[in-house]
Image (cartoon, rainbow over all chains, first blue to last red; front, side, top):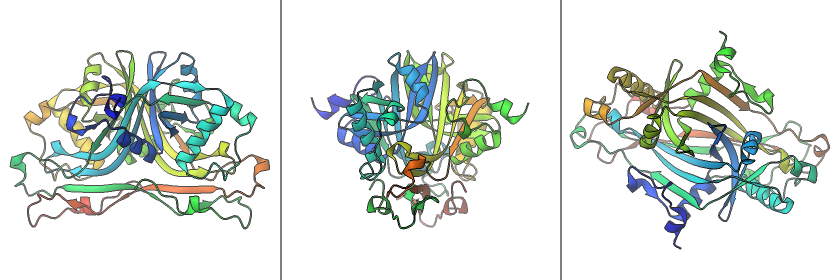
Length: 220
Length: 220
């Protein structure tokens, strides 16, 4: 099965502007790996919910974990279907016409079923994947979860079988007759930057952040 | 009706960690106004969908518009309920224990019904709200939509009657016995920054970006 077959399905097919669709697994995983927050959608009592959550990936499994997991947990009891969306915003695209204004972005949408992870060893692996996704190297620096904490945690796995990426980059596309207008057009780039780490006010004297923290960067 | 009454309802009540809940309209609107992308969740044929979209606000109406609107448009024919989530990520919170790792963020969740805007004058107002939300001042710089473009556009309005904000800021909170661990703890701040505007390669000679573009900033 090639990458496209593996990740493309009827539902995740981009229906409009197919030139922006991209089903390659490598692209999909690179967007997932750069993002920090995903938005998880599901239905509960016939109402739609969208919850921002942290996540991690190991192989073709996406692990979800969030402070509002209780609602998702309740939904999972019924084996809920989820749609997970991850969006990286790269810039604002200003065309000569209001109509052709756009954004440059890289996004992934994943369809699947949220499966609660309950096995203790599997939970530790999933939690490690999340912590390492957010700050590589942090899992072995921090105190790892004890049994009580594991019991208080809800971890969810989604198999990355049905996913697609969508990317827009580059300058605006205006209608031919608009290129002569006296209107500036181009891109305003946006990016997420990392600030200088701030010590916890209660940090004991003499403890310094590791290189995992001081050299922290995201994406390229 | 006070602000809390106006924006709080049973469904949007934050169920866990209520100290982080914030129902004040001013807070909710400031988060909405700073964000650039929202994630819109709805059900279609009993499947959950989450779509990233641009948006604007005018008063207590949120306008949605996106290149993948066709799917939403189809759902709207049945008067679909939506959940709209807007998340601003402010930093990574590194605790001494893996368990207490967190993020600093400001988020809003809105429940409502997506109503398609079809009246031409109302559409122009909604599109203006979106363009002005993304780049203030841009609506009057760009060529405004003509009738053909208006007909090709799907615009959706969601009444901001049922919304809540959730905010986390500040240092990590560790268990008392963990403060003596030899582990650095604190925050890695994150923020979105604006790069230098990039001219469209097809820009006519002598056209320069306005101050709305060159002084573009987001948030505080």
